[in-house]
Amino acid sequence: MPKTLAPPQKKIVRRWIIFFIIALAVSGLTAFTLETELRWLLKVWPFHETGDLYNWVQKVYKALKNTNINYPFLAYGYDWLAFAHLIIALVFIGPLRDPVKNKWIIEAGMLACLLVFPLAFIAGAVRGIPIYWRLIDCSFGIIGLIPLTICYTLIRKIHA
Image 1: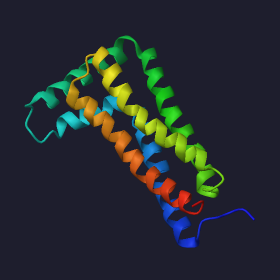
Image 2: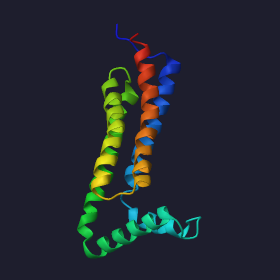
Image 3: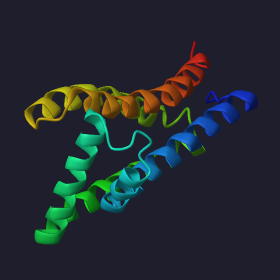
Image 4: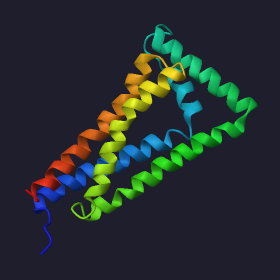
């Protein structure tokens, strides 16, 4: 007889997976409207146009705006980034339905969250991304790792 999660455990796992799916989808959807989001962020900036972070966001906004004016086809890469986030979010419907059977998806998600770190630090350094921005990127790996680790721990408990 296959092992399954107890109802309270399954409820906790389902809630964390739903959180993860929503966070992944929202993260992806923001790639479609990045220029608008950055323009809005600069308008509501609480520090009155000061600091390294503000300067970096402004630099990124200007570069993105100029790129979209002169080379709009490059935004197609952001479209694919958003699409990939949405597709990966869909994959987590498997563990949502049957967490035990689809534990490998949770494991793959955890690995992907961990791999955010070398990507941010290696590619970020190569591309001239400031360290504080790379740390912000790494926070997405941490935020994703937390619910997936909780789910994985609960799923493993039934196999102990």
